[in-house]
Image (cartoon, rainbow, N blue to C red; front, side):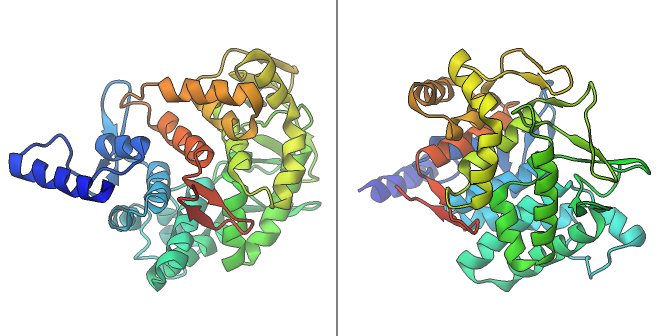
Length: 352
């Protein structure tokens, strides 16, 4: 009956010439909101506070993920075609050095790995080798260009190909490494097993205050260098979200979550997460916004979980709220069992 209604609605829109909806609606309001406000002909569109539009590789990576959750292969493939152009994937022939590679490495480690993850999920779902080939190209160049060697930790993943290392120190970002993404890409590119293991050791070394830092800096003997600017804000908060939606069977999740009990306890006590945690001064300040609510939802329980659910449900997403929308779709999509992740990072959608 529901499918019949959807079909009749689409026919009605075509016959009446109405442009209120140019796509078939799903039963997921937030996905419909994304399509209506942030999707246009294969491009994921974001807006500045001044109303100007732009497209980012990060936005494309999230849009492709949710198209897979919604079984929307048509839009997934359309976004992939745009992403191929953005990252120059068609021209990549194995080069990992020189001007060609530098030109092609426009996205961060986090974005490249997320896109590779999307492609591997699509390959397993649709059995089309083009997805696998694109993913393998991304992973090979990321492993080659976005790493640094530490005498103690070995090879570690940097947030990007440049700007995160000097002759004295290097910087990593925990949010670049969603456990489910790393589990999946490690299956197809063995080098990432080593990179994930080594970089996780770095993350654990930086968890002493019970908060995730946006960035962690180390010297080449792998000593953590805590500065007055070592803080956890929205970027660090993403790591709570990635941990929360990762499979309970993932042993890394079991190890990492207890390291960040301070944030879950504080959120439960205060009914909000701190906007900033300073790991140098051991202080917190401010009240986190909707992004923090979304990032903490999967890790919360009891009354605070219900409270966060309500806050997210009543939030009105304006056009400039693209990242808040994406984080909320991850959190509530998982909470409502629209998708779940297996131990190896595989995506299962519509588990209700």
